[in-house]
Length: 328
Ligand SMILES: [Zn+2]
Image (cartoon, rainbow, N blue to C red; front, top):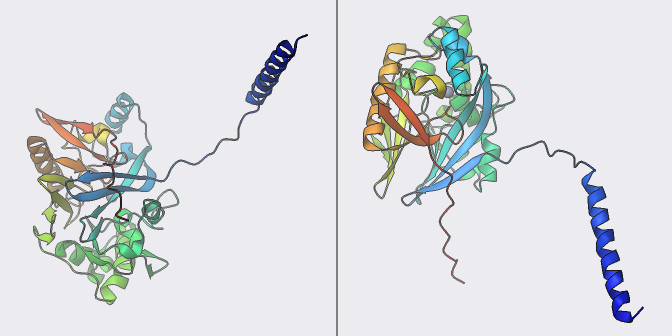
């Protein structure tokens, strides 16, 4: 055997060994990793950087909660390849205007069970620290939006000022309202008070009235009904707009097609439906990008109006623009 033929034979044998080794390894299953990626999604809105933050999901018996026959809800869920209980997202939004770091809603903290309360972890994973947040704007004071303000009574955003509509604060932070509330809803008042009180006591809660520009590029947009002072927020930069609409919708499989259907959490169902339809109409007409706290994460998309119904068009995934290299 010539040296050439010998070396070729050795190469073939080596390749066969490697292939054999690889093939036998393929029969050994890798242990499943089990956890998903951190829940954040980032994009630019004009000059503003927006980060959708997931607080997690919670299973809700929406067939029992929506104000329509349960069979109708189940059929609508089925048509959308979903089922009851529905796994509902809880989203918050972080906006870096370049001058201020603004957080809209704070997730549930420990007020709503172990599948929620992921906001702080996801905020950190996204590259920010809670201490960097300058302003927190609350859509309303239900536990899945204010619970993240504190953990074990300790303030989680040590440098932030918290804001909400004055009507919302007056309702949920009233001792009188807590005392006269039915037992079933007392926990909502207690959750709001426990979350807000540490900020109120240290002079870092500042309510606002109605529709105002709160910081440059961030304005309140009253959309009452879900609660007494439920507020959406309009974010604007370089002619681009994003409307953070909080709890104007909970169940996409039902309420886009039938925006008159309300939910047990709505304090004033009639006003809640009217606010939903008003905001949906305007967003559809103007092509505004909207975000829903309980739409499937990241909860971002556009609305298309067809008669009295709406169609949800979720945003496509997009990359961040290339960063300019830092000067040396
Ligand atoms: Zn909510």
